[in-house]
Length: 179
Image 1 (cartoon, one colour):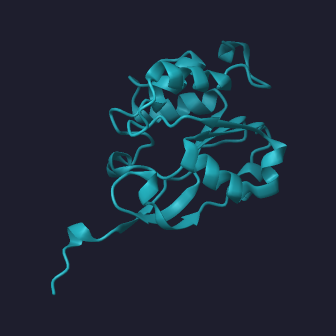
Image 2: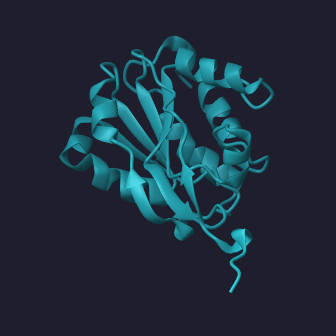
């Protein structure tokens, strides 16, 4: 019997966190999808609305910026990124296909961020898993569960944006971030 490599699930790994000591809002996804992993960039799928949504929330055009500038702009606005799942087997990009996962040490990360006041989850899977990982530590932060920016989650863009706007005007936001 010959096994086809195309049929084997591969162990997918998340990216390093994008945070600094000024991070006030942390947005956690589940695990990068195939396009993101191939490009080594958060939210690289061209139909993923993450950069558009967050750009509207922050009042900054993010999608047209080179990737490294997107990340530095987020940090300048006190926004960090990471994923709940450190690594897992997953065929394709759907969260429902995540198997045998190892979670990131979210407790250690949030403890290292002295300005952090809000943790937002990009999608239901990220929220469900992330809240379990954080456990009692979640009560120290404002928790925001957002509709997924993924094209697989078919909620209309306007409805997604309405929900994502809850990230505006959070505690400690600078005047440039208020909406």
